[in-house]
Image (cartoon, rainbow, N blue to C red; front, side, top):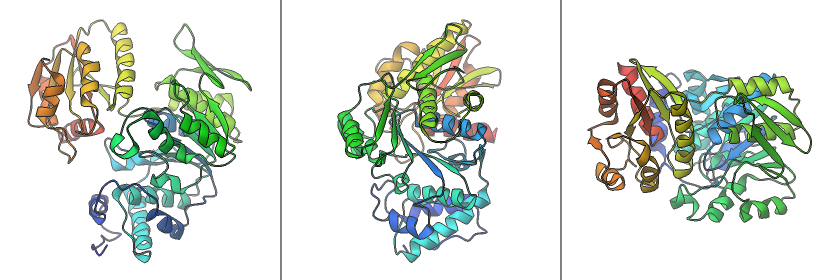
Length: 427
């Protein structure tokens, strides 16, 4: 805790490096250290409407859509998401725009002063999350849209009481921290639920008992996909219908997953905010998210970036890929630039992708939790695999060697996408 703090005049990179070394571990679930600091900063009871979103997959798409709709409706929205892909500033947006470096640095100065006065250390994620809250308070945001980082019950985002709680779905991920069953993980996600508030459950699966129990305990009002609200895409593929007991709407499909768009629509409709159908439509069309089946043209090659890193995420990636290939028959093969973290379900992800990939270009990530090449090789079995010393070199090879019939897919981890972006920035 005696680590020398940077100055307000130091760079954002210097501050981020500092927060990476203040605490003994990068992930330290629990709110005991965070709450006193948050209270000293005055961010635990914001004068704003708060939407908190937890779930295994789809949090990013859901929070992005929520914020876009609320921005279109004229609210001053603070959006907090993690992790970032290309720049740290992606994590904190106000009115749809990333905050500038100095706003983050000024907030970091306040967070560091508060945690020192409390005699406490904070993890990187705790400190950076509290900084986002400080910015939202300072900028007088009247709506906060918050994405939970890990779990829910013990995540730093949960120091703020939500007015609307959203759980997108429940899958097996982060089992070392959250538990090794759907019910154990659901119990952690349900920790964001508060008494007498609306709760949206956007999972396609049966409602986990842990969430049902928490809803009943809190006398909350549950709205579940395929039970309390529904969506159906029209034959033209350009519009879809949202239906609940209160309303029926025809809306544009947008570029994100309809499961998550419909969940965002359900959440804003059960709030007491004034949201027109025009704002819903504009928000859905404006909602874009980097790294979620993001299609880019690079050196005359089509490259798709997708941050799916668990079976549920890859299942959705494959649905989108098959749909894309059906509309672009010139692509007969997919070449993937691939790497994952060692604590993910690498075997299941590789098994799901195998039948769709003609050539794998793999490398170990340059992060502490990187899966070594040997682990990736075992998961891939007898696939057509090429090894590289870095993800950047793997991507360069893909650009140089693919032909006009081959599509490049970059996937497996947010870190895989980040490595490619760093390569492109340096070019």
